[in-house]
Each structure stands twice: as C-alpha cells, then as structure tokens.
Picture 1 (cartoon, rainbow, N blue to C red):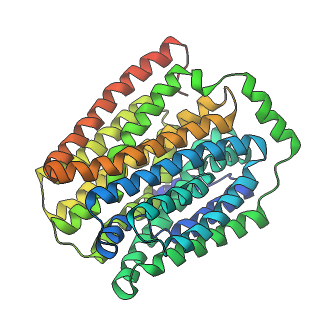
Picture 2 (picture 1 turned 60 degrees about the horizontal axis):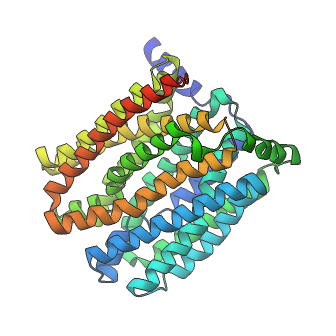
Length: 408
C-alpha cells in the first residue's frame, strides 16, 4: 500500500504548481484536440471519398506542410509584435471557419490550395502557444508545462481518432470537418475569455531580446532544427502512410485503426508527466534522453518488418509512443533554452517550422516511397534515417560543449 501511495503522490505531484493561465491553455488545447478528426483520416478521406491517387495525396500533404511553414513564421512574428493571446485566439477562429469551408472543396489543385490556407491560419497558433508558456511558467516549470499541454493534446487525440472512426463508419467523412471547426471555435472562446492580455512591458521585453541573438545565426540551434525535422519525417508516417499500411496490408477497419492511434494518446495521458518528472529529478542528460528516444522510434519501424503481425502493431505503437514521450518535451526544452538568447517568437517559430518542413517532405516522401518500393523497404529507409539522427545528436552535443553550453 505504501508503494501505491508513493506512486500516486509522485504522479499527482507532477501536476502541481502551474498557474491558472497554464491550466486554461491546457483545457483549451484539450477541447480543440478532442475534435481533431480530419488530419488523422485525411489520407483515407482523399483516397476513399475523393478517389485521389497516393501520389496526389502526398502532394496535398506537402501543401499541408507548406502552409504550416508560412503559418509558423507568421505566428512567431506576430507573437513578438502584437502578443501571443491575440494570435492564438485569431488563429483558432479563422481555422475553425476554414475547416467548415474545406469540406466543400473538390479536386486535386483546389484541395491543395484549401489545405495550404487552412494550415497558414491554424499553425500560427503553435509558436504563439510556446511563447505563452514562456510568459505563464517560470523556467524550471517549462518542460513540465509543455508536457502538460502535450498531455491535453494526446488525451484529446486519444478521443478524436476513435470518435472519428465511428463517425466515418456511421455518417461519412463530412461530420469530421464540422467537429474540427466547432472545437476550434470553442477553444478560441475559452482563451479569449480567460487568458490575461499581454501587457506593454512584456511586449517591449520580447522586442529588446531581439538584439541579443538571432536564431538564424545560431549554428548549434540550426543543426538541432535539422535533427528535429529528420526525426519528425518518420514520426509523421504514423498519421499518413502507417494507417494505410494497417488498412491495405493487415485489412484493419477504420474503427480498429482509430483505436490503435488512440492508444498513443491514452498511454501519453497515463505516463508522460511522471516520466518527464522522473527524468528531470534524476538529472538525466538531455542528449542521452534524446538519443534513447530516437532509438525507440527507430525500433517501432523495424518491428513492422521484423514481426509483421497484427499483435505487434500494438507493440510498435508502444515503442513509438515511449520514444515520442521522451523526445518531444525535451526537444522543446532545448529550443526554450536557446530562445533565452533572443526573441522568443523567432526561436520558437523556427522550432515549429522544423515540424512544418517535415510535413512538406515526410508525407509525400513516405507515400511515394511506398508506391515505388513497397512498405517493407520504406520502413527500413525510415529506420535508417532515425539512426542517422542518433549520430547527429552526438555531433550536436559536441558542438554545444565546445561553445560552453551544457544542457541543464
């Protein structure tokens, strides 16, 4: 009983000490992500409902990433200028309206344009959110605050795909767009009504920080961004080509695919906060954590080939999820630590742009590789990319040590 009580106290303590704005941001994120149903099923929607080829789907997903690059840059720039709160609320309202319109778009090129506009609006939110975390959480809480919001994202995501599969099975794809839109608008209402406005002092402090350092001339940070993009390219396959693999190779239904994807968010909800707290309290090396995380994601792809059975699809998802839980909170921590050198919006915009670049390359690359070489070779290629990332993380550690910057 003592062990259980201690475990519970450790788990509960992982959530202690956050300010009201952090909790509001977390709740709004959960509401928004609980309605995230279009993106996980977009490849299935485009192939089954619109009848597009895999190559066309890949280009549409690249438009998704291109819009994300522009939106991330714009969101970071606006956050340093007009404030993160205004940017977040505006991004949620406009992207909600864009989701309503997107369901009526037909044809390959119009859908490319529609997805691009949607992502420009939607992804302006992300750098603004990271800047908000910096405003509402002290440095020692930022990694846990990011993890808390990731928990909300993944708890919502554990519900979204499962509900999305049910909606598709019983009512078609159209309902997904409406749910996504309504939850964007609900999240905007929560943030608009609850978050304090950014004062002039905060805005001027962000501007003054611009003279300290530019992320565009920060060599280790630029290498770090390359690594983040290279890790993200294989990771994103779990939301484009891997669902197709589940369907085409293993013959799984949309509902079962939704449950497998949803297990990712559920596991994160149950274990990520205490895992991050454990790593921080034990003062585990940041670079070591990142290397282990990438090896776990690589193992998840290797398993798809080494043990190609339905039961091991769940094991592969487990490996990927643990790798994700270790990787993304701590890559964010590294970005935040570097952002202390200059304008936070600019630094965090580039961090989100690294993800966006992965969207541009990753979805199209994965789907085209499958069309050209099949699933087996594609999974081995992505395993190799992740192993290269492990080597680059060793190089990054050496660069940071040479400049005298050690991960705290």
